[in-house]
Image (cartoon, rainbow, N blue to C red):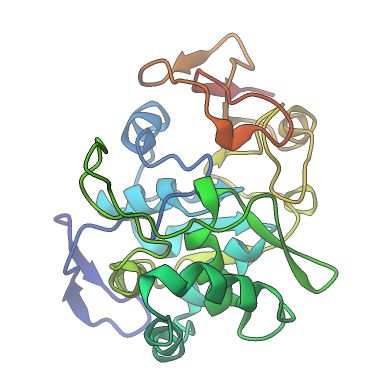
Length: 282
């Protein structure tokens, strides 16, 4: 099936995607720049299931969809609020109208930071997924937002609105929440409807036959509100592919160019300056 052309497996209705899908915003550790290269090593077949575990903002699954992989063959799992989002996207129940209302209620750019700080003080049970997308889009450095004891938790504050000075190299203002966020979220809801989205602890999940890709919190980097031993887990489930800042097996590929360390990762260490994909075998 040509890229961009879809058949809704629930209704049989044919439709086309109006734009190439992208994650809704920058997110710490997201694999947007590596997704094609990662999938070139995994080489998923369209008649197989694909498990995208610790999926976060969904860069790998989104690239699969862009390449024509059927949504119904993809399982996306994340323990944090991303898992709640992907579950609603897959079922077609994410409330785009409610989310659009939240976006319309955003104040002038200079006041958005204070507005997000106010939203972050509310109980996390109120419009959880809509509020999460706004909070996560506005965090400094794309560092993760999660829920802890019914409240929103994060490691950094929110980006302030910034305008360039006469000597600034960047010539464009930096907004707290991207202008195109509603459009990207709507496109994702259209393109990924039918995926199996799960908000669950990966340690309690056992994938079935198919390709398994895991993108865990990297060792020594800023956290996501939870951790787990990826090698111990891989030993239980068998063959899988794992992203890390170092090789984890004899069969591993270094991806892209060497990265510079980033202050975004200063929560528990220094950012990995390498990106590796490792094949873990039983």
